[in-house]
Figure 1 (tube, rainbow, N blue to C red):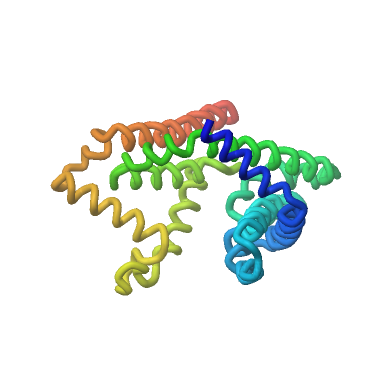
Figure 2 (cartoon, rainbow, N blue to C red; figure 1 turned 90 degrees about the horizontal axis):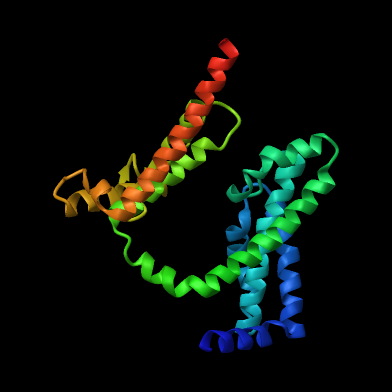
Length: 253
């Protein structure tokens, strides 16, 4: 009952004419920002944050949420039309969306993306509303080994998304990570090789996991969360490789 009463109060605030206007304004501006390749919704929110300083807290949050969702959809426009993702989350849209544009079906691709964005965003909001307390409790169970395993899963999963061989995709991911690791450590300021964003995070959690386990590498398979994540990572890595190997044998046969 408390959840329903909170939702009723939230809808009463969100559906006022003022907040709906700022939501429309945020979505419009966010869509324009999202179309620009490399900007993304988060940078758009950071740049446009001063616009909300003179608004009420409710209107400011509604406008920022509109900028975020508009930016996420706007990134798919560039992916579909010019095969250049507006943000990292819309990179997968290039695979099918731009192919539809080349066949003269850009309007259909944009319409499908808009509908999918609305359905996916609404479904995600419902899940977050209902399961946020459980997710918060589950997140507290994550240790250094689990965070490291999740990062490995993300890298391997991104390597499997592509039209070339899994080996070339994995090599592209490795090169991208190596280029991003050079610089200054954001935590200590020390100049070192592993010093940008992904590098220190992975290194930090790897060091913590090994420190807590006294150097025992089996900690990554003994912890249930990290073991499950690594198992999924192995499946994501092995299954496309098997499919590519079978197609290679079929072509040579």
